[in-house]
Amino acid sequence: QVQLVESGGGLVQAGGSLRLSCAASASGLPFSSYTMGWFRQAPGKEREFVAAISWSGGNTHYVSSVKGRFTISRDNAKNTVYLQMNSLKPEDTAVYYCAANQGGISTRWAAYDYWGQGTQVTVSS
Image (cartoon, rainbow, N blue to C red; front, side, top):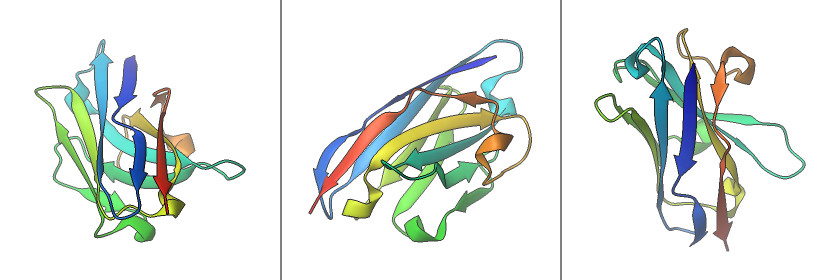
């Protein structure tokens, strides 16, 4: 079991930056056993993959629309995964969710077993 709590969302102007954090508390397998992902969902749209990172942090994957602007990272000693978001655009506005799975990196939301409650990111133009 993994419980995930996101933080760091807010309102920012276009071109600004935010860093999202996702704190995990795991029972059973340690946090370092899980691949972690970030997804987002804008009003009226489907949940969209944003980024994922392997258990060791050695492998990452991004949706093309955020490459070069967003960076996913993790600190296994702190049981936390981060999403650094730079050069934010109004189209990045969404609720951002972190998720965990025991398999490898996947862009499919159905591959993830555990989800946080989400944090709102709003980018004004």
